[in-house]
Length: 295
Length: 294
Image 1: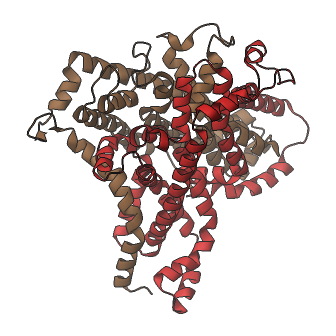
Image 2: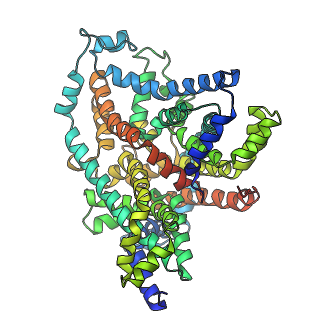
Image 3: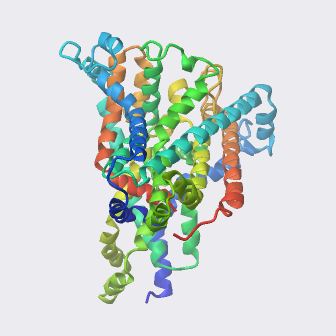
């Protein structure tokens, strides 16, 4: 019906506007960032290829490397708290919403539970900071001022905000579970608990895996909440510093640190690698093995 | 790709006939748990909104009390409007968000139609490139983005934000619209071509069928753009170009102990989006579940 030349020209014309913007402002900058990490701009001669020197500096310079490992460990903790609190609560809420025990209230609960996820992270941070400020009297301990509690507390603020995302994600997966299988189990006398773990959860395992890996990507991209609450050198004593704030501080500078474009690109590339490697390994090893049932 | 929510009404009707109507123990537990989590989710927001209409002593004296004639006050709001730049911030956020949504919808719809309609070898490759972009952490390209903007004289302009946000929104928008265009019946497009319509006219004729998709893309694009702090901070930090998110961040930094003003600023940041979300929540959740659910 459509001639091959027409098809070729049309495809190009239709796709080009989106592709150009996407390549120019998303793909290309990421690629350039990786490239820049192998160069130095500090030399007077202009841009000089320095191989892995920036990486060597990042991993061996006493102060810089200590900050990096600290931020990485904090980021792992930040992810772990999301993984063990946010994802299970999201699953619980999705399971409750699709338990078949609700009627009209299902939509109301769903809408209300998702509200925090629509807010700006900045606003969420400040709402919680006001509420847990000892000045207001709900809490009597400076949770954000203590090195032990600051990061877990900030992580929980983020969990509070984003728990709606895994909820909605798993909720729509659970809705696709065919009602007749569930109904058959129910007639056989299976409890709601057994129906969920025996039938529904195995069917949504691939989506559950996907939300875990998305949580990983999102938390390793984290920045806004911590920056809003604690600035670019997140205290106390860098105990809430994660890779995103480290990256910002490195390339943009902060009160105690000069901006360093080369090292910034290097940090960005390291973060990108951390995200990419885990995501790739996950898709190769885990996601392929999770059976997708044709439902 | 499953259109999960389209099953919803069907599922509902079977459920109604299924379980008994009595208040079983299970139902009570389910409602109790959900109510607990709802209170946890909206309680803090309500406390902020409630107290933004009170005088300072009442905020600290009885944080859970409703404002009375004696404690009611909008002083916080007055201070926000006189000392902050809220109107300008709103205007900036609105411009950035609306133009980004428009650009995203136009470009992504065209691209998705092209990818579905012209089945050349390269189409799936391009489609894959867009899908990868959904997971691409675009922030990590900030150093080159900043340099591009500097060389184009776009630093500290809203245009810089719009370009980056459009690039950020295109992958999910294209992927979502591809799913919608697959549902357009071939006969419709064939009939248009037989009537002598060109390729672009055929596209326009197919467009009304994917209207729900456009709404889903719009709602899905809106939140991350409106709420972002990173790019306004890096690309458009000056007073005249600040968005609401950055404006609130800076305002709070300046008025750390003025609780009424802080609470008012937060309320102003929260309410518009929550209202919009509640109005469009069905479309939003539909868009979200389709966008990520494949």
